Length: 327
Image (cartoon, rainbow, N blue to C red; front, side, top):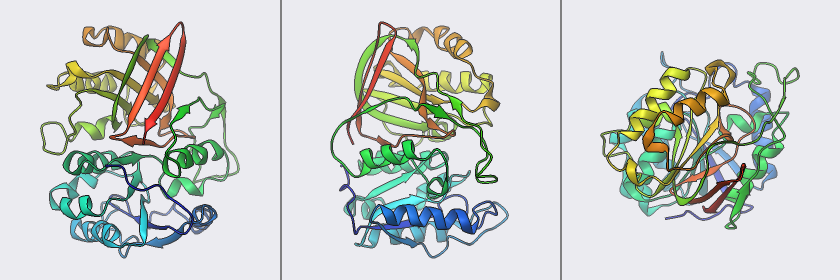
């Protein structure tokens, strides 16, 4: 079930299923830039009732976060629900959500990082395609945002399939703290770990967050999928290795079609050589096409992609082509 694409005049609701909007680095200037960018897309911006509430966990109560999410789905004027930022606790909401309400009011839900738990659970429980992509926070980025905005529009404003091309440069700095002094590095392009060809539904997002759903009713069936996986600075080579191993142990993994891995932050100390060693030591991956260093995850810029949509992956003769077909 693919929600309607966005058009000028549609409403967007900003919600906080994890961290609050009251985080100090979500400053007023950043918020003004984000609102202006969304309005330039023709969208009418509104905020959920409890976005500025904040507790010891930089969040608010489960009930308030659930109420805000339900209200956004109920509101007929809202066509896009976008999260302020990630965090650590959106999985707290899963048992309290009205999945029938969500299924009967299909609309775009977009966010990444910790939102992986929420987005995959909603897809698993309702069949509604959700989106791993920009936060409200992301729209406040002054520099290096054009690529991210382009793929946001390709995915959410159009039905046409699109090819994912590598960005020319990328950044891994804490840009919200200093928007003027940033370091951008040349992009090496896709890393081809295993060659091959695949097509399938897209499942995934943040790797360690996806792990929280294993063994629960909230994990999508990965049969016939291309897994899109990434992790942030809190991960390192050994934890990434074991988390990939954990996915291999899932009952339907033998029917996974391919793996696409997002760009790692520098703090993980992951390199192409180390990732290749991780992949090549797992015999279950020998027959799967695997590419990495794709523009999604916790670096900038990033693509937006559909959880539950479909992709095609071709990695042959040291060249890779990634296409988002149905979104």
